[in-house]
Image 1 (tube, rainbow, N blue to C red):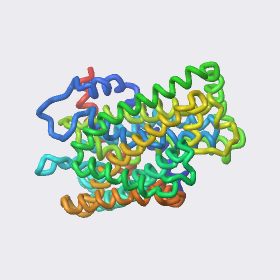
Image 2: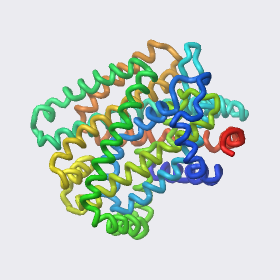
Image 3: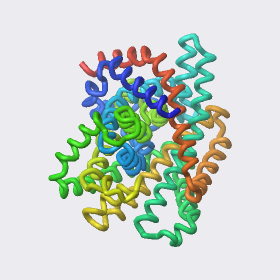
Image 4: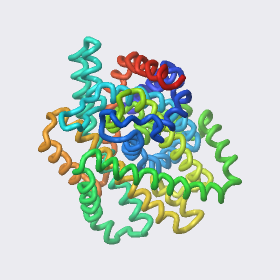
Length: 443
């Protein structure tokens, strides 16, 4: 049951926030200094810089969840869902800090200098240290299997399907070439994916470190233009977010319903507690695990507190969610953008393609690491998985994805069960690492 897992994630976020004494706020300034390269050391082991590791992980989270997911939350739960999305983002910062510190602490540096890390490794190695090797192994394999399903579903097919849907909607192409030959879009997407992902984490990081900042800036500036045009509506929108969070009208399940909705969409967007991001963050060049934990807390902040909130305000201030048009998901966001400048939806469609592409790139890497954990670090296994991953992009473009979305949503949330057990059992290790780091660098 997804609702129960959402509550499980809320508890995890609360636990990490209190256990690490509000690290989401206290280490915020230091995280920016780390990303800017202020504390970088050239002799650190790892493959990519703090900035590139953050970009890769962000490209896995900043995706169509920010464009379509927010619209889904508001159309089902009203403006109040936004409040719970923001809160989820703030709690998620502490959770990401914990899981990404563990990711670096227990990663494997392979003989060729490449890195393998993530929940699979801290569950096996960390719990083995605690005298629970069998539990650790069981949870790690459980996590890796769910991760493979999530990478093919939510990390790939969902992205291709939703970006194609937006292109068809914006171009008025229902019944047009792409609508009738959707596999063509899937094939182009798959080919471009292959070009990037066959090159491994260094090429992925090189692409995402350019793609993510530029597309996020385009999206944020576009949204700010719309908010400036509708500036008189912002106070009303903020009031409706706050009032709707605590006394929602007509939402199934009332207050609890809107809370679960907000958290569910936020978690689908920022993936805090899911255990996916530590796979990307583990590749960082550092000898101090706490550094990447501190860097990673920026991720839910950028993804949810900034980008999702801006999207929500655009949808609410333009009034499209209350127009009763029956339009939902990314199409609703597109309509909100188009209500100010008619050509804006075209820009949004381009951004959506880039969002979808960058998310798929990152999730291919997560899937590779999960598959090689299960079957061993073999180049042939890696290549086979990458080819399967690319072919799923073609499948994703051609299918009606309602059932696939449910499956990928489920597998994404199921990753949280083994991951959070590891977070609870190993939180003490993170505390030691963080204390040691603070004494040295944050006086």
